[in-house]
Image (cartoon, rainbow, N blue to C red):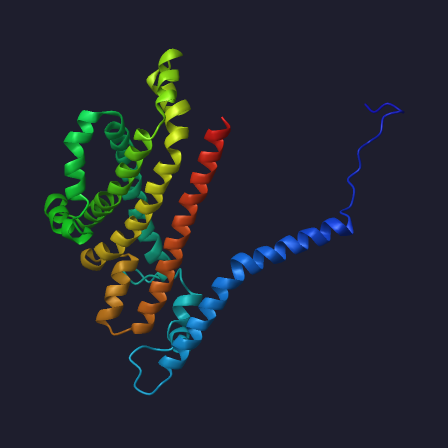
Length: 285
């Protein structure tokens, strides 16, 4: 209930000065972050168009790519049964495999990274093994995984897992080892439990290192699934690229590479955004 002498707050319209400042900030953001990549991409497309339009050019020009793949662009969700599906379904199938393999790598990688970072014995025993295994190329794991799982889907997930886990382990362990000794002493004085120590000391201090490893890992996951799907077949953007190559559909390959790059960029930005949120919240807490 409002008393007679009480005033009701009224939203004030934005002043011209505030609107002008907002417009100036938006313009600066556009000039700083949006315009430079647009200019570079535009120049590259122009050069590509000039080179691809020459007689006898090995690769199609951008206009030719759009012309050849127009149906794939405007109908990405078509489904004619079996492997004859639109490029959106191909990307979705690959992303599902990445989600499984990467999630397993995050859980195992952070856990092992904490173990190696906390324990000197674990570091001495496991670090040489990690350093050897992380140099094995992703596709070198595929025959072993196919022999073990006898199926393409879990084999691809294993390749993603084994490829992306190493930067997560290494960066997490570095972050744990870099926790200041004063923080550890305070935790001992106030007798924090293991879970409390992880949430209140370890995670805030090591979060920047952990998410650096997660960003590298998600990029490696996406690289690994594209390569693995070229060999295991079925539905997936990697198989789509290989099938297009066997059918001499170069325009389809170029379109798929554009989508692969955009999805990889989006995955990196998503992990980076989550990392900023987690780091900010843990620091504030």
